Length: 585
Image (tube, rainbow, N blue to C red; front, top):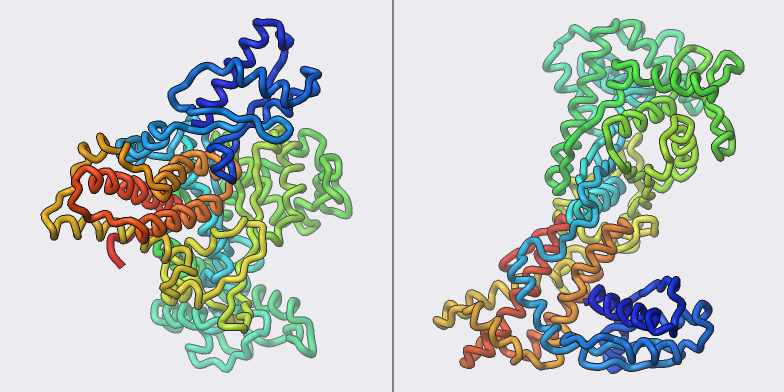
C-alpha cells in the first residue's frame, strides 16, 4: 500500500511538471509513513515539506497542488492536509481487508521479497574459541547471527552461514597443556595444575577420555614435567609458567603425540559446540578451520600480496603492515621476529579467502570487545584492493545473566560460567532465542531468567506463542461443534469485518512485509520481535472482545479467515527468529 500511495504522489508530481507548476527537472524524495493517530488517516507523507525549497512555495500550497492532481484510486477514501503540509491518506476498508486473502494465499511466503536478488552474503557468527563450552554470553551472538541470516534469506539474498574455528594459536595450546596435565593426574602423577590453565570440569572429562583411549602412552613423571619452570602466580609469572608448560608438553610428547592431545581437546569441544548450537536451532553451512589457512599457506600468500603493494615493511626483525596509511591508529605486526605469523595475519588471510570465494558482502558478528579490530581489518582489505564497504561488522554486547538480583560472574578460564546448554534446559530454546533479540545487538542487555520462564503477558515469547496456540484451539473448537471453517466463504464475506479491533488487526498484518524488509536491510531482528508482540496484543484484544465460534456462518468464517491470517504471520515471524509456533500450550 505504501508503494501504491508513493506511485500516486509521483503521478501527481509528474502532472504538475507537465502543467508547468513544477520544474521539469524536479526530483522528489517521497516517504510514506504510518500515522500514529488513526483519526489522521492511515498513511502520511511529508513530500510537500521536502519540496518547499526547490519549488519555492509554502508546503501547504504544495500539498494542495499535489492533492488536486492525485489520480483516483479505489484504495484511497480521502486525503487531508495537516499541520505545516503533511498529506494524510485514508485507506478504504476493501483495501485493508484484502490483506487477509493475500496472507492465506501466500502462506509461508507472505512477507518474503526479492530485494537481495541472489546477492551472495556470508554471515560469520559465534566463532567462539573451542577452548570450552558455549556460555550464555555466546548465546546472544548465536541468536542474532542466525536471525539476521534468516531475515536476509527471506529478503532474497543467497546466504552462507559460517563458523570460524580458531583451532590454532596460544589459547589452543593452553587447552592442550591443560588436558595433558589433567591426563597425568588421571595417570597418578602429582601435578600442580597451573593457575592459568583451563580449569573447568569439561577438561577433566576430556582427559579421562584421553586416558581411556591412550592408556599410559602419554605419561611422563611429574618431576620431568615440572623441573626448571618459571614459578606460577602469585609468587611468579603465570603467563611464563603456562608457556613453559606448553613447551615442555611439546618436547616430551613429540609432534605426533602432542597433536593427539591437542586434537582430543579441540575435537571434543568443537563437537560439543556443534551439538549445543544445533539444539539452539543454529546450524552452519561451513565450519572454517583457522589451521587450514596455515596448511594451505594462505597466510604467507596474504602477507606476500601486501608486500607486493608496498604495504609491509621490516622493523626489529618483524614484518609490519602499514595500517596507518589506511586510517588505523598504528601499524600492526603480521610476522614476529621469531618468524611466527600473528593472529591478525591469519585474520587478513581469512578475509581474503572469504572474498576470493565469491561473496559480494561479508557480515561479521563480533563481540563488542572487538570494536577496535574493525579499522585494522578494513585497512587490510583496502590494501588488498577489496572495497572495505563490502565488510559489514555488527557488534553484539554480551548478555548479562541475573538470578534474582544477583549477577552471575563468568570466566571461561576458571570454569565458572553458565553454559548455553544449561540456559536452554532452564528456560527453553524458544525463550532464549527470543529474549536475545528483543533489543538492538549493540545495546546492553540483562537476561531475566525468571521472566523468561514465566507464563504471563509480561513474557513476550509466551504471549506470542499463546496467541498462535489460541487460534489453533479455535480450529479444534469448531470441529467439536461440527462447524468446519470454510475459507472460501470467509474470504467472500470480509466486508463483515468492520469492528475496530478487526480493522486494527488487519492493519497490523499489513505492516509485516515492511517490517521484514526493514529488519533485513538494517540487520535488526528486534524489529520483528517487537512487531510480533504488537500483533499478539492486537489479536488477544480482538479475541477477548469478540466471539469466533458463533452460529452466523458468514461472519464466523470471515473472522476465522482473519484469525488464520494472524496465525500465519505469527508463525512466519517466529520462524525467522528461530522460535517454534506451538499449536497448544
